[in-house]
Image (cartoon, helix red, strand yellow):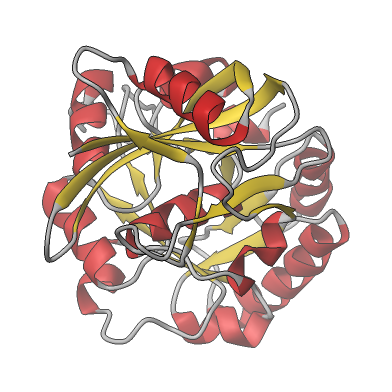
Length: 307
Protein backbone atom coordinates (compact mmCIF):
# COMPACT_ATOMS: atom_id res chain seq x y z
CA UNK A 1 0.00 0.00 0.00
CA UNK A 2 1.60 3.31 -1.06
CA UNK A 3 1.64 5.92 1.71
CA UNK A 4 2.91 9.51 1.66
CA UNK A 5 4.29 10.93 4.91
CA UNK A 6 5.35 14.47 5.81
CA UNK A 7 8.01 15.39 8.35
CA UNK A 8 7.07 19.04 8.80
CA UNK A 9 9.53 21.48 10.39
CA UNK A 10 8.61 24.96 11.61
CA UNK A 11 11.02 27.90 11.46
CA UNK A 12 12.41 27.06 14.93
CA UNK A 13 13.31 23.46 14.01
CA UNK A 14 10.38 21.77 15.77
CA UNK A 15 8.50 18.88 14.15
CA UNK A 16 4.78 18.35 13.75
CA UNK A 17 3.31 15.10 15.10
CA UNK A 18 -0.30 13.99 15.42
CA UNK A 19 -2.03 11.19 17.30
CA UNK A 20 -3.95 8.45 15.53
CA UNK A 21 -7.56 7.82 16.49
CA UNK A 22 -8.02 4.89 18.86
CA UNK A 23 -10.18 3.10 16.25
CA UNK A 24 -7.61 3.42 13.42
CA UNK A 25 -4.90 0.94 12.42
CA UNK A 26 -2.09 1.40 15.00
CA UNK A 27 -4.59 3.52 16.94
CA UNK A 28 -3.43 5.72 19.81
CA UNK A 29 0.14 6.01 18.55
CA UNK A 30 1.79 9.24 17.45
CA UNK A 31 2.76 9.71 13.81
CA UNK A 32 3.90 12.12 11.17
CA UNK A 33 0.89 13.30 9.13
CA UNK A 34 0.08 11.79 5.75
CA UNK A 35 -1.96 9.05 4.18
CA UNK A 36 -2.59 6.69 1.29
CA UNK A 37 -2.08 7.78 -2.29
CA UNK A 38 -5.25 7.94 -4.36
CA UNK A 39 -5.11 6.36 -7.85
CA UNK A 40 -3.08 8.56 -10.20
CA UNK A 41 -1.75 10.83 -7.43
CA UNK A 42 1.92 11.71 -7.04
CA UNK A 43 3.48 11.70 -3.56
CA UNK A 44 3.54 15.52 -3.51
CA UNK A 45 -0.13 15.73 -4.58
CA UNK A 46 -1.17 13.19 -1.95
CA UNK A 47 0.62 15.10 0.78
CA UNK A 48 -0.85 18.43 -0.30
CA UNK A 49 -4.30 16.87 -0.03
CA UNK A 50 -3.68 15.02 3.23
CA UNK A 51 -2.06 17.98 5.00
CA UNK A 52 -4.86 20.31 3.91
CA UNK A 53 -7.48 17.84 5.16
CA UNK A 54 -5.73 16.83 8.38
CA UNK A 55 -3.89 19.90 9.65
CA UNK A 56 -4.81 22.82 7.37
CA UNK A 57 -1.42 23.66 5.85
CA UNK A 58 -0.06 23.89 2.30
CA UNK A 59 3.47 22.76 1.35
CA UNK A 60 5.69 25.38 -0.28
CA UNK A 61 9.11 23.68 0.09
CA UNK A 62 9.82 19.95 0.43
CA UNK A 63 12.25 17.24 -0.58
CA UNK A 64 12.47 13.47 -0.29
CA UNK A 65 13.78 12.39 3.12
CA UNK A 66 13.56 8.59 2.89
CA UNK A 67 11.71 5.85 0.99
CA UNK A 68 11.15 2.51 2.67
CA UNK A 69 8.99 -0.58 2.86
CA UNK A 70 7.56 -2.02 6.06
CA UNK A 71 5.76 -5.34 6.50
CA UNK A 72 3.13 -5.45 9.25
CA UNK A 73 1.53 -8.85 9.98
CA UNK A 74 -1.70 -7.65 8.38
CA UNK A 75 -0.34 -5.48 5.53
CA UNK A 76 2.75 -4.17 3.75
CA UNK A 77 3.26 -0.44 3.25
CA UNK A 78 5.55 1.56 0.99
CA UNK A 79 6.37 4.90 2.60
CA UNK A 80 7.52 7.95 0.65
CA UNK A 81 8.59 10.45 3.29
CA UNK A 82 9.05 14.11 2.42
CA UNK A 83 10.82 16.66 4.59
CA UNK A 84 8.72 19.85 4.56
CA UNK A 85 10.75 22.94 5.42
CA UNK A 86 8.23 25.64 4.48
CA UNK A 87 4.44 25.84 4.38
CA UNK A 88 1.50 28.21 4.47
CA UNK A 89 -1.18 28.20 7.14
CA UNK A 90 -1.35 27.41 10.84
CA UNK A 91 -1.37 23.73 11.74
CA UNK A 92 -4.37 22.55 13.72
CA UNK A 93 -6.15 19.22 14.15
CA UNK A 94 -8.96 19.57 11.60
CA UNK A 95 -10.28 16.07 12.39
CA UNK A 96 -10.13 16.61 16.16
CA UNK A 97 -6.84 14.74 16.52
CA UNK A 98 -4.25 15.85 19.11
CA UNK A 99 -1.35 17.73 17.51
CA UNK A 100 2.01 18.86 18.89
CA UNK A 101 5.14 20.68 17.79
CA UNK A 102 8.13 18.97 19.42
CA UNK A 103 11.90 19.31 19.43
CA UNK A 104 13.71 16.46 17.62
CA UNK A 105 15.33 15.41 20.91
CA UNK A 106 11.84 14.93 22.43
CA UNK A 107 10.63 12.37 19.87
CA UNK A 108 11.84 9.43 21.97
CA UNK A 109 9.18 10.28 24.57
CA UNK A 110 6.39 9.39 22.14
CA UNK A 111 5.23 5.99 20.88
CA UNK A 112 5.22 5.68 17.07
CA UNK A 113 4.22 2.81 14.74
CA UNK A 114 7.05 0.39 13.97
CA UNK A 115 7.18 1.62 10.37
CA UNK A 116 8.21 5.06 11.65
CA UNK A 117 11.46 3.87 13.27
CA UNK A 118 13.67 4.52 10.20
CA UNK A 119 11.97 7.92 9.81
CA UNK A 120 12.93 8.83 13.37
CA UNK A 121 16.52 7.81 12.59
CA UNK A 122 16.52 9.88 9.41
CA UNK A 123 15.26 12.94 11.31
CA UNK A 124 18.10 12.49 13.80
CA UNK A 125 20.85 12.30 11.17
CA UNK A 126 22.44 15.22 9.28
CA UNK A 127 22.81 15.38 5.51
CA UNK A 128 26.62 15.29 5.56
CA UNK A 129 28.80 12.54 7.03
CA UNK A 130 32.50 13.34 7.07
CA UNK A 131 34.92 10.42 6.92
CA UNK A 132 38.33 11.68 7.97
CA UNK A 133 41.47 11.05 5.95
CA UNK A 134 44.37 9.21 7.57
CA UNK A 135 45.52 11.25 10.60
CA UNK A 136 49.24 11.20 9.89
CA UNK A 137 51.60 12.02 12.79
CA UNK A 138 52.72 15.63 12.71
CA UNK A 139 49.90 16.71 10.40
CA UNK A 140 47.41 19.52 11.06
CA UNK A 141 44.63 16.94 11.50
CA UNK A 142 42.77 18.48 14.45
CA UNK A 143 42.82 22.08 13.12
CA UNK A 144 41.45 20.82 9.79
CA UNK A 145 38.78 18.81 11.60
CA UNK A 146 37.78 21.95 13.46
CA UNK A 147 37.60 23.84 10.16
CA UNK A 148 35.17 21.23 8.82
CA UNK A 149 33.08 21.52 11.97
CA UNK A 150 32.99 25.30 11.57
CA UNK A 151 31.66 24.75 8.04
CA UNK A 152 28.70 22.87 9.50
CA UNK A 153 29.70 19.18 9.58
CA UNK A 154 27.80 17.51 12.41
CA UNK A 155 28.63 13.82 11.99
CA UNK A 156 32.21 12.54 11.77
CA UNK A 157 33.77 9.12 11.33
CA UNK A 158 37.32 8.93 12.66
CA UNK A 159 39.01 6.49 10.31
CA UNK A 160 42.60 5.25 10.41
CA UNK A 161 44.24 2.18 8.91
CA UNK A 162 47.73 2.95 10.23
CA UNK A 163 47.48 4.05 13.86
CA UNK A 164 47.67 1.43 16.61
CA UNK A 165 45.24 1.62 19.53
CA UNK A 166 47.81 3.38 21.75
CA UNK A 167 47.94 6.25 19.21
CA UNK A 168 44.33 6.11 18.01
CA UNK A 169 42.69 6.27 21.45
CA UNK A 170 44.15 9.62 22.64
CA UNK A 171 43.46 11.13 19.21
CA UNK A 172 39.89 9.87 19.35
CA UNK A 173 39.38 11.46 22.76
CA UNK A 174 40.64 14.81 21.48
CA UNK A 175 38.48 14.55 18.37
CA UNK A 176 35.41 13.67 20.46
CA UNK A 177 35.93 16.73 22.66
CA UNK A 178 36.35 18.92 19.58
CA UNK A 179 33.21 17.56 17.94
CA UNK A 180 31.14 17.96 21.09
CA UNK A 181 32.29 21.56 21.45
CA UNK A 182 30.71 22.21 18.04
CA UNK A 183 27.53 20.22 18.66
CA UNK A 184 28.67 17.35 16.43
CA UNK A 185 28.88 13.60 16.99
CA UNK A 186 31.86 11.34 16.32
CA UNK A 187 31.88 7.66 15.42
CA UNK A 188 34.93 5.46 15.75
CA UNK A 189 35.79 3.23 12.81
CA UNK A 190 36.94 0.24 14.84
CA UNK A 191 35.84 -2.08 17.57
CA UNK A 192 32.85 -1.02 19.72
CA UNK A 193 35.09 -1.28 22.79
CA UNK A 194 37.28 1.48 21.35
CA UNK A 195 34.25 3.72 20.91
CA UNK A 196 33.26 3.15 24.52
CA UNK A 197 36.78 3.82 25.79
CA UNK A 198 37.09 7.06 23.84
CA UNK A 199 33.72 8.50 24.81
CA UNK A 200 32.62 8.51 21.15
CA UNK A 201 28.96 8.76 20.22
CA UNK A 202 29.02 5.50 18.33
CA UNK A 203 30.84 3.11 16.05
CA UNK A 204 31.09 2.62 12.30
CA UNK A 205 31.42 -1.02 11.21
CA UNK A 206 33.27 -2.20 8.14
CA UNK A 207 32.06 -5.29 6.29
CA UNK A 208 33.94 -7.75 8.53
CA UNK A 209 32.78 -6.16 11.77
CA UNK A 210 29.19 -6.04 10.50
CA UNK A 211 29.35 -9.73 9.57
CA UNK A 212 30.81 -10.66 12.98
CA UNK A 213 28.46 -8.45 15.00
CA UNK A 214 26.30 -10.29 17.50
CA UNK A 215 24.38 -7.97 19.81
CA UNK A 216 24.06 -4.32 18.92
CA UNK A 217 26.64 -2.48 21.06
CA UNK A 218 25.32 -0.11 23.76
CA UNK A 219 26.15 3.04 21.84
CA UNK A 220 24.08 5.98 20.65
CA UNK A 221 24.77 5.44 16.94
CA UNK A 222 25.88 2.44 14.92
CA UNK A 223 26.68 2.82 11.22
CA UNK A 224 27.90 0.29 8.68
CA UNK A 225 29.61 0.22 5.29
CA UNK A 226 27.61 -1.66 2.65
CA UNK A 227 28.05 -2.43 -1.04
CA UNK A 228 25.01 -4.53 -1.93
CA UNK A 229 21.48 -5.56 -0.97
CA UNK A 230 22.66 -8.46 1.21
CA UNK A 231 24.78 -6.20 3.40
CA UNK A 232 22.01 -3.60 3.66
CA UNK A 233 19.58 -6.28 4.82
CA UNK A 234 22.13 -7.62 7.31
CA UNK A 235 22.73 -4.13 8.72
CA UNK A 236 18.99 -3.60 9.24
CA UNK A 237 18.54 -7.05 10.82
CA UNK A 238 21.31 -6.37 13.33
CA UNK A 239 19.86 -3.05 14.48
CA UNK A 240 22.31 -0.74 12.71
CA UNK A 241 21.03 2.86 12.63
CA UNK A 242 22.24 3.81 9.16
CA UNK A 243 24.31 2.52 6.27
CA UNK A 244 26.82 4.00 3.84
CA UNK A 245 26.41 2.56 0.34
CA UNK A 246 29.29 2.79 -2.12
CA UNK A 247 30.75 3.49 -4.55
CA UNK A 248 28.22 5.69 -6.31
CA UNK A 249 30.81 7.20 -8.68
CA UNK A 250 34.45 6.52 -9.53
CA UNK A 251 36.89 7.24 -6.72
CA UNK A 252 40.63 7.87 -6.60
CA UNK A 253 40.95 5.71 -3.48
CA UNK A 254 39.29 2.63 -5.09
CA UNK A 255 39.81 2.97 -8.85
CA UNK A 256 39.17 -0.75 -9.42
CA UNK A 257 35.64 -0.63 -7.92
CA UNK A 258 32.72 -0.60 -10.37
CA UNK A 259 30.49 2.41 -9.60
CA UNK A 260 26.85 1.77 -8.75
CA UNK A 261 25.54 4.90 -10.45
CA UNK A 262 22.52 6.78 -9.17
CA UNK A 263 19.91 4.45 -10.67
CA UNK A 264 21.34 1.38 -8.93
CA UNK A 265 21.85 3.35 -5.72
CA UNK A 266 18.19 4.30 -5.72
CA UNK A 267 17.05 0.73 -6.38
CA UNK A 268 19.10 -0.52 -3.42
CA UNK A 269 18.18 2.30 -1.04
CA UNK A 270 14.48 1.92 -1.89
CA UNK A 271 14.56 -1.66 -0.61
CA UNK A 272 16.51 -0.74 2.53
CA UNK A 273 14.76 -0.27 5.87
CA UNK A 274 17.25 2.21 7.31
CA UNK A 275 18.69 5.57 6.23
CA UNK A 276 21.42 5.25 3.58
CA UNK A 277 24.21 7.72 2.80
CA UNK A 278 25.71 7.85 -0.69
CA UNK A 279 29.52 7.52 -0.79
CA UNK A 280 32.12 7.49 -3.54
CA UNK A 281 33.42 10.40 -5.60
CA UNK A 282 30.85 12.85 -4.17
CA UNK A 283 30.98 16.34 -2.73
CA UNK A 284 28.63 19.16 -1.72
CA UNK A 285 27.51 19.68 -5.33
CA UNK A 286 26.05 16.14 -5.37
CA UNK A 287 23.78 16.61 -2.36
CA UNK A 288 20.64 17.46 -4.34
CA UNK A 289 21.15 14.39 -6.57
CA UNK A 290 21.65 12.24 -3.47
CA UNK A 291 18.37 13.45 -1.95
CA UNK A 292 16.54 12.97 -5.24
CA UNK A 293 17.65 9.31 -5.30
CA UNK A 294 16.55 8.52 -1.76
CA UNK A 295 19.79 9.11 0.14
CA UNK A 296 19.97 10.51 3.64
CA UNK A 297 22.75 12.66 2.24
CA UNK A 298 26.38 12.29 1.22
CA UNK A 299 29.33 10.69 2.98
CA UNK A 300 32.74 11.84 1.81
CA UNK A 301 36.39 12.20 2.66
CA UNK A 302 37.88 14.76 0.26
CA UNK A 303 34.52 16.28 -0.63
CA UNK A 304 33.83 17.37 2.95
CA UNK A 305 37.39 17.67 4.33
CA UNK A 306 38.84 20.13 1.87
CA UNK A 307 36.17 22.81 2.18
